Length: 394
Image (tube, rainbow, N blue to C red; front, top):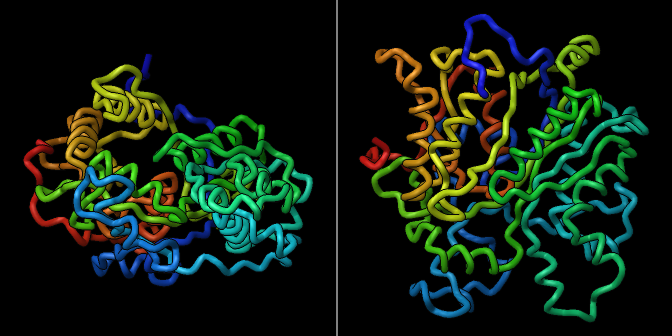
């Protein structure tokens, strides 16, 4: 049974600090990301041309076999560069490694570097690694040329190794796991990292996610399901919404117990008050979200954190731009949080997917990176595609 909110109560005794991060997002970088959002830039383009022969898999008719009706996407462009020797990996093994694993290694190093932490200082420590990952695109490419397969393909293209390789390279002895819960993968990985720190299982943790477009398969299946926008826009909460745009990218956060981070003099970019996870259970369809369970989770998360819904300044929603998902989410937010606020204090909500697209398994990272920016600059961005509020949200 969920505890009701009690003013001044504090249900979570310990908290988690975010002390560093690194990311790769389409059309931007760490210096320009926040400025791009403030300028309402649309960072969606199309799949990088070198990935595959797009004309062979593109057709306007949804039911046309073996094709997608769109390759609109947020792309991080060249992903071939990798300093294998820096991480003690042979050129041959690196060539057969999923680029998602390569990027995760780079971002893990950068996250520690940005935290002011020497990676060597973590050797042998109970530092956990929790990675959200769902795509197996690179293995599909290798399956087209079975002659190149050797023993490195197995470790280079297995999801579990995406996390375990980080633990191996950096000599981290805490829990190490890859998590696939579809679009919520990076969010659930973040939750598990926080829980591991709060229970004392880990002293700190690297957590994040990755999603790259390396094969047309993903576009084909989501096109056949009519989930993708023909207009190439994630029109979040907008009357013109017709689906989402697949984008690629990833990120890694370095987390630590808040009190320990204070004691060690670490930079604290943000504080995690609480995390919570649930499942929809039985509903009208396998991929259809449930407003009831979403609302219940929101109530639980804020009650456990001791946060009054009336005190929330802004809520970053999932908001993909789909005709089914957006109204369900808005309904859940309204029921769980909006109705607990005075009429003269409405809750502002938004979603960066309108600017960046949907990073799927890594989507939560594109939104979490905003938090330090908002706290540091005291401003909020505006979606590049929002024009007319959809009546379906009421």
